Image 1 (cartoon, rainbow, N blue to C red):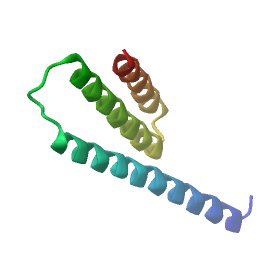
Image 2: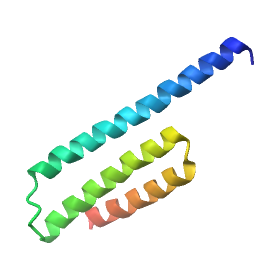
Image 3: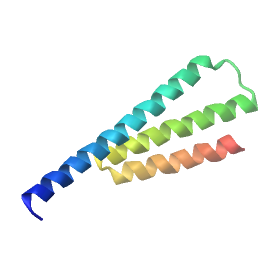
Length: 91
């Protein structure tokens, strides 16, 4: 691999990582907006499922950040946790 190819590969990796971090930030912003609209004093089953869904979405953002860092183990843990919250949200 020549120097130009190495630079191009490094640039693509930087762009990909930045894209993952941007997506994670968008997810977090959406969750914050939804949480601001929720009545957090409710404890009924439907409300708990909504909270579980939001937790799963947050774990998706964590997985994206871990991938951006190149931390495959943390990304795997976050996706397993995301699946757990998704199952709970679906009942």
